[in-house]
Image (cartoon, rainbow, N blue to C red; front, side, top):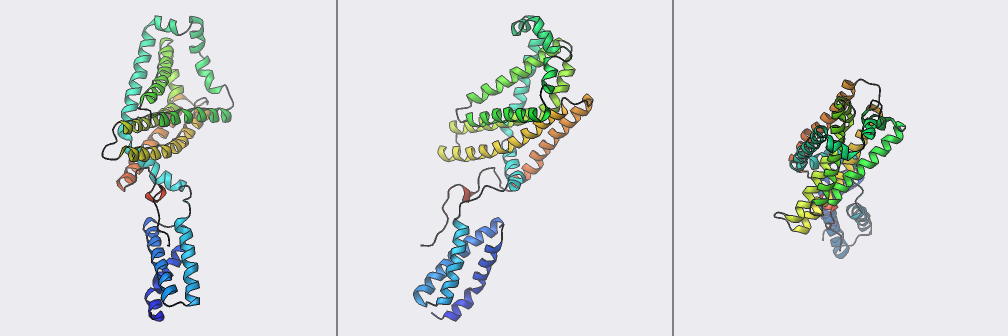
Length: 332
């Protein structure tokens, strides 16, 4: 082997590999290039070591290959939060919209029907609680209104966020059990809302109830519906995995659901802050509802604009191929 010719032929590749190794972040194509150059450098080192050993060049390539191997085969760090929120989470929201949007419509119809039933049937209200207890619930300053100002705002926000995040996580996790537990959790939530609507409507204070519910409830309920829809999709994957193997389909949807849980926790944090600081505030009802509506509108724009663009670019909310346990090339 003519060592000078060999070095001249491959020097540019080694230099490019060194350049990529110095970069803290790599794009997708650059990461692929890094792996390819690492494999080629490993081959070059093997050839030089066996055919034309040169201590200086061998040492240089050994260090270069070692650095590249460390970068290529090192355990993957947690996905960058900015990239997750900019691409993966909105893409997952957009991709599952055909599940959670119908879930939202059906759930709200159930809550409305329950509210109508409670409001128009005195015997139903009597079965819920004694008349004195109902008056205490629905009177001005009663339990429904006092609930939002019964604790310091900061601790209340933390409590609300924790409770709602747990409910969303339950929907996501229980989805694997053939959908039925998700329906039960969702129905329980809609019964609670429907009863509140019915009781306050029967007392002539439905506007007050909606003024308390809508500011935070729009975003909060949307997050719950997304979690429920995602859980239902996960459960349906067990029943009908489509063209994928059931194991592979469940793994893919399960990983996306776990990412969804993280994203929804952040969404619920926003709704919890609104519930703790805006809902019980002295702002007029129209101002509180405007804030809640703006938050919901921002979320929907995030889903359909940002998420639609990410989905069309090929994002699914699942881990990248090199984060799912796929092997990477190593020197032998």
